[in-house]
Length: 257
Length: 267
Ligand SMILES: Nc1ncnc2c1ncn2[C@@H]1O[C@H](COP(=O)(O)OP(=O)(O)OP(=O)(O)O)[C@@H](O)[C@H]1O
Ligand SMILES: [Mg+2]
Image 1 (spheres, rainbow over the protein chains, first blue to last red):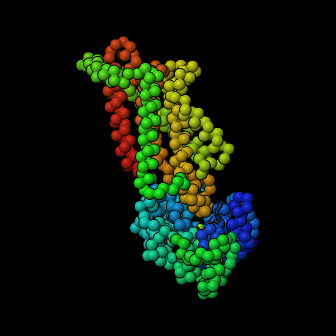
Image 2 (spheres, rainbow over the protein chains, first blue to last red):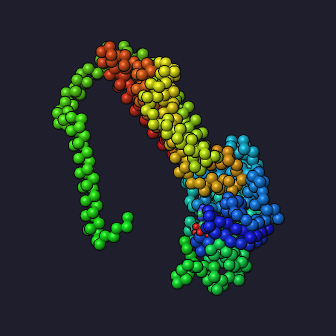
Image 3 (cartoon, protein in one colour):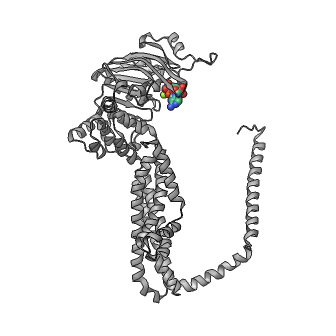
């Protein structure tokens, strides 16, 4: 279980981006964070694996506080947290297979990682994962020759190669067409159910969030304004989440992208 | 720009006006500098054909110059070796400096300034000046030429590599960090594969460039094909000197064609 307690983040001097953020995310569930642009969704997600250093609070993953970890502990923790991005962020001249194998780097010695020394088992597993996301035939293709949807699936395979407890997704479908969106979201939901993973996902598309997420966290201007099952989200809740603090007259826009 | 134009016509009129002013300024600068150096454009242009004909008559290799082919090819080979080896050595060291100095990969922010400053110092001293300075300590030898090219190339490539690495999307490296990769793994598994083809292009370009510079440096250091050119030239064997120029041109063109092929293959 992921438990975020009183998380606080200030950029620079007085740009208060997260204020007293509390929420939980359960294994076996898809948890979606929704909120207007600039609300702090990315900041939350990146604090969870400490790509961003926050200013206070607790982030408990199975009762271990990630914030207290030293450098080598953090590396071990990160090894079990997958992350996928809007821009996929694969190493583009490398093949899909090599990118998936990168998921093992956190468990490798510096030397073995640098020289790409992967065992036969690891290579077999990477290939199996590519098959699992439907990309077996693209294993030896350069990643920049794959479509957006395919690249995102390579990203998922890379995350799975980490044997993750949790996968963080920062707007994973923002650059995808409806068909690829469905493929990617179906995979993520299936992973939560079958492998009992914690799936924490930032979304701009409310309809997708309501369709796929079990649990919804609503954020506005760095504050959690809603947390509950997706069935409990109604128009009133959405109004609250997407309220524009400084422009009250402007219409509420749901789909920012 | 905050200017508000009433109509597109007005906007384009202003555009044309600005272009006109720039052209006029350039013409004035040209005129003034002509007067200052006492350069008669027309008269000089008239002399060009005569000069070319003289060159043509004297520098065309004759049958006699074939006998010089052996020593020329040998020195050309040595010059090529010096330019290739200096470029390769400089690019290896330059890569290390670039990784240490690029904003995205620098482990110490303080180091960035030092490397930046050092690289620009190396780069901004002309290669001929390098050769003359180094002549004091290393005398006339291939090694002096090698060092002069090495220093200039090191400065140049460090800068080019640094910029290539900084252009890389930092999020790609964060993705590897998120996996649990450490610094060295990020550099070797992420940065290097991403920049490899651009870096190779730079190295190939510098080899071409250094072959040309190596000839020039050779005149000073008394080595390689540059020295040979100078030697034949001063002893009035213009046809042999012409043969050297021809062979250098052929070699440079071959080099360019090869590197174009390599570049295409790795792109
Ligand atoms: N590196 C940074 N330096 C300063 N301020 C930042 C930085 N990154 C984010 N912020 C600020 O923190 C706030 C939250 O940003 P964040 O990126 O988390 O929003 P978001 O909800 O992910 O938005 P979007 O939906 O547009 O991706 C914003 O007001 C943003 O301006
Ligand atoms: Mg964001």
